[in-house]
Image 1 (cartoon, rainbow, N blue to C red):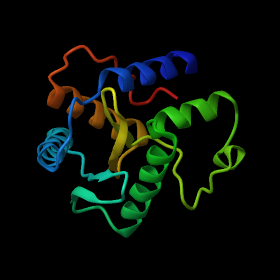
Image 2 (image 1 turned 60 degrees about the vertical axis):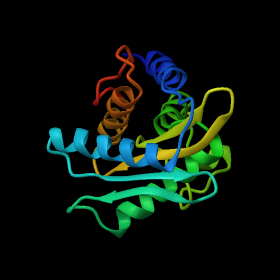
Image 3 (image 1 turned 90 degrees about the horizontal axis):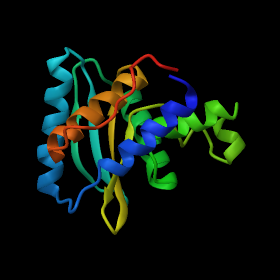
Length: 166
């Protein structure tokens, strides 16, 4: 896949994987689906679902995760909250332009440029939070999110990118 194709797929994913509502109960159910999806492939991950007001409504930490994983998830959350797009989409856009976070005035101590953060977008409302998966390759983190969101939202035809594309 070319970088333009990757960006197009990531944009389609965000358009398709929208919610019509989102509650704390939804966060619990979705979070557990994400953890189960990762475990099915023997991936040990950390998962966090956070609202834009900073409230964490779901959190899971696998046995191989640590405080650094938590810090990375916070940086991914900041990226999604600020830019209202997945962190892998940002990574791909910056890679295409041969840019880095500082080029768009984001401090890498506070923001992440890599897969694993995905916006919780409510149809006709906008982004209200972020779902974060960490502790694997950033393409794998993103793919786990997409598969779990597809399952949770009952959407079968969501385009995906290979987990080693860029």
